[in-house]
Structures are given as C-alpha cells and as structure tokens.
Figure (cartoon, rainbow, N blue to C red):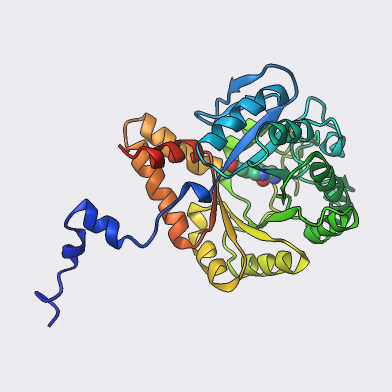
Length: 333
Ligand code: PBG
C-alpha cells in the first residue's frame, strides 16, 4: 500500500525542496551562441527572421564577443555571409573571408572564448546547396575536398573547433586528415553527425541567405533531402554518429533538438563522447512568436526547453537563447 506512506508531492512542497531534489540543471557552461558575420564595415543590423539576433561585420564582432564572454558563455559558433557567391563557394576558404577575419578579431579580443566555425558551402554557393553540383547531382567527394580546405583555413585563422554541417559522407575524415597533415592536432571537430532535413531551419536560411535556389523547383535538388537525414530514421542517425566518431569527430551533434530528443537520448547512452544538440532557428522562433502573441511566457518556455534538451542527454546546447539564458541564470528574478 503506497499511499499515504508515499506522497510524491512532499518533494514538491517548496522551491527549496524542488531545488534540492532537482535532477537536471542547465548551466551557462553548456551553451554555445551562434553569430552571423557578413561582409562590410560597421554593421550591427537586427536579423528580421531571428528576433534579438544581429548581422555583424568582422570589425564589429569583438564587442559582441566580449559581451558573450562576460556572460560566462564558453563558445560562439560563426556563420559567414560573403558578398560574392559562385558555383563552388570560393569565398569559403579565402584567407580574407568574413569568417576567417572574424575569428582573428575574436581571438585577439577575447582569447579564452572558444570559436567554433560552421563548415559548409551553402552560404557561399550561388545555387545554395551545401556542396558542388555535377551533372545535376551533389558531387560528394569533390565537396569533401573543398570542406577540408575550408576547415583548414578556419584553423589557420585561429578557430578552436570546426563544425561541418553539410552531411556529405566522409567529410570528417577529409577534415581530420587535412588538420593532422598541417599540424593542427588540437583543433577539435564537432560534426553535425545526425542532421535531419528539417522544416525548422526556415528562419536561419533567411538569416544566412542560404536556401537552395528556386531554379531547382521540381527537381531532386529542390531541397536538401539527398544529403540531410529523413526525419523518420532513428537507426540511421546512430549509424551516422558512429561513422563520424570513427572518422575523427571529437563532439557529435544532433540537429534539430526538440523534435529529436529521442535521438539525443539514444546517442548519449551509446557514445562515449560529448553530445551537442542544436536548438535551431525554428525552435527559437516558435517560442518567440508565441510569446510575442501573448500566448506563453518567453523565459519560462526558454528554460523549460533547454532543460528538456539537457535531460535527454545533451552536454552542449547551441541556442540563439544563449545570452538570454545566461542572463537569467545570473539573475533568476
Ligand atoms: C548550413 C546550416 C544550416 C543550419 C546550420 N548550418 C541550414 C541548413 O542546413 O539548411 C540551420 C541552423 C538553424 O536553423 O538554426 N548547412
């Protein structure tokens, strides 16, 4: 007879009691804040599709990096918007590319803030795909070679972690080899290992100007489904993660986060390396739009979401809420 000996509500009777027994807490140490760098000077411009986020030029990024570091956030993740795009994405590995310049600015200003760079061609190609196209198809291996060049140029600029997000087969191996051959033994790879072809990337593609060209309408290249994963496949997600670990990834990522908590959970039980979860732009804007409409409490929904992702097993959470969450953690009232 459990009741009345057992009353589950005893452990919920006050905030202090709830704090004492709480199983999961999100720390500022867990957070990564994404930043968008565009070509130009003196730019700090709000991004319409991502409430509270900005486009920066390389010369304005140091101030933002200092603010992020002062909040205790350990890392930023950089995305680049070049002025010129072409079929191969040549700006992606240019020494004077926007991300390369921004990495140098940040490492000069706040050496202890970890700089993670997104390694993917979609922001740099004029057609908007994450790789190069040959005969109407993505050329997997040719893309890997370019991604390795891109990752190497980020390492040369001073990046601490490179994060390939393209979903080509074998790219982690290409990148690891390029880094080792050039003596970047300590540059870590955080691979977007299980990245799903998700509708929740919508606001990001607007922010990063990286959607596949409308010219592909009606073809196999209309979307990213020939390389990003089908949302229905969990076993393949685990296979993808295992391959990236074998090829030399130090941290593996599941993306998006909220609709894929089961994948995060299973990955965290199966793999002995840190698991990152990317709570993507659509997840962020769902909360913001509902809050703007007066339908839910922005901060409570934010913290509940982050807690759920951590509870599922994520060690690292990449989120546009990072600054907000860090502020809330410093000053909960
Ligand atoms: C680039 C990339 C994307 C995101 C991160 N890196 C977009 C995509 O795959 O189309 C999405 C991030 C977000 O939605 O917040 N490949």
